[in-house]
Length: 204
Image 1 (cartoon, helix red, strand yellow):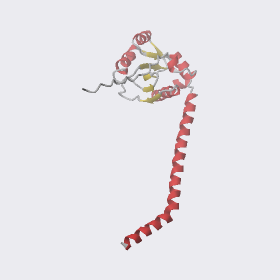
Image 2 (image 1 turned 90 degrees about the vertical axis):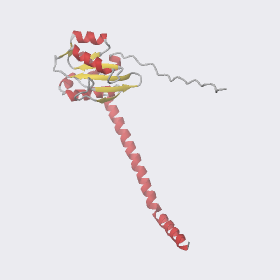
Image 3 (image 1 turned 45 degrees about the vertical axis):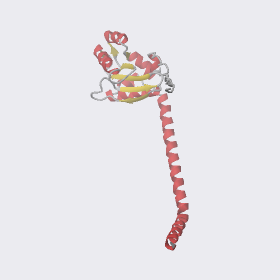
Image 4 (image 1 turned 90 degrees about the horizontal axis):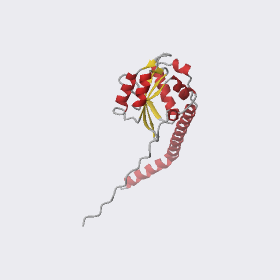
């Protein structure tokens, strides 16, 4: 019993002597954690501020490759308030960028970077229509090109709810800063109401 008490006393003495070091280490951990949080938040604010001012000229877009074009479209969506990510790769099933917005829903962008004067045909519209909803669960589908669309592609897209952005519209969106939802007049989704569950009367 005496030995146990002596051991407990020795442990207490060690804890008392080590307390300043433990307190200093704990304080340092808290300070470092707070610094990391503030640094991350500041970096996000800086990035958001930069994207809010994002403007990309048509000349700059023409100089991009396919992947850079997809990244630029993602950044433009983020600028406009969407949570967006680039998903384009081989086998992407007609989706290069996917975005999400609370009032607008889910959007899919299919990017078609062409040479100046290049045209996008109706077959692209068919592909997007076939995958946007069934595969990607999109509420909105948009085909974007730095070129133009054939007359049939525009007509088919408008008839079947596939939006399109040609060179002129891309200038308004990327270079002049017009938000995409305003440019294409996306309707806002009504707020979803959660139905109240009716309480059943207890059985007699």
